[in-house]
Length: 141
Ligand SMILES: [Fe+2]
Ligand SMILES: [Fe+2]
Image 1: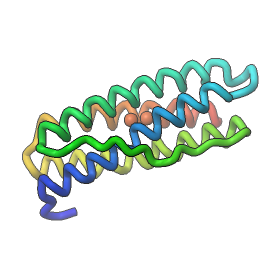
Image 2 (image 1 turned 90 degrees about the vertical axis):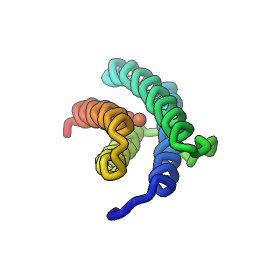
Image 3 (image 1 turned 180 degrees about the vertical axis):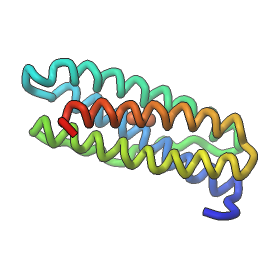
Image 4 (image 1 turned 120 degrees about the vertical axis):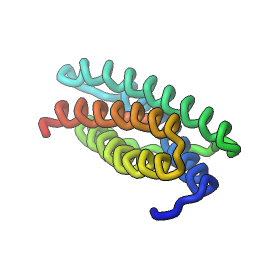
């Protein structure tokens, strides 16, 4: 997106924030219903992911407020399934979507010379890539 304004960036960050809330809800629900001995270590991973998504939401809310916006409180619907593999695939889908969004967001922040924000977004992006790696590993991808 060429020539992004600060207001447009705040709007996009608010969509990212809302999807972090969704990730918290989804990981919390999935870790509660994930079945099977082979998923025991993955269940612990999902709990860690949920906690890290909360950290991301907290960072984004602070940055949005700093940029003059009002942090969102809406929570887009999470995905659920009764099948463990499907659940992990839904989680991976969410991570891949987050990775694509944050790659764009880092560039947009830098375009506006918001280097502190860009740095924070890079940290979040690296964590989402780690989450995706965990899920890919569990899915044998
Ligand atoms: Fe996140
Ligand atoms: Fe994540």
